[in-house]
Image (tube, helix red, strand yellow):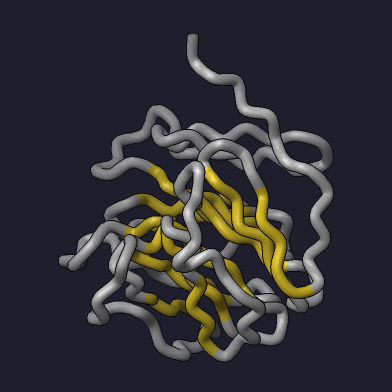
Length: 191
């Protein structure tokens, strides 16, 4: 888990290799992605900057003018590259991550909130209304046009890329393709 100040919390067998907590950075941290090769990880900030901890650094959008803030990232299956995704759907590729297109420059019904990599090499973007955009990855459906109790906050792919899950701010999980529903978080409501 990563906090907005860059603090990282490792659990189980996930190693702790450092974090951005307490270091100067110009934008809040919006995600962390593990490197499948080294066991390290990358933290990405809304300004597009990437910090690597026990993982190779391949570049970032830090210091570049962005049309929209970065909201997430995903690693290539072999860990030799990664993508950053912005709220307007723009994709930025680094290392061996190939660019297959993006929603950047397109009119969107809702902002993009995250992405997931397809183990075959492509990727999906997900918007807060549940819409999914596929790039060199199979489309298994989405929640676009559905009435949601809470906005979507993220997406995760199955290990073989034969489906994906969307998660909402209230902890509800939606399954597509061969992604099996195994339950949802019960989020405490404020008093």
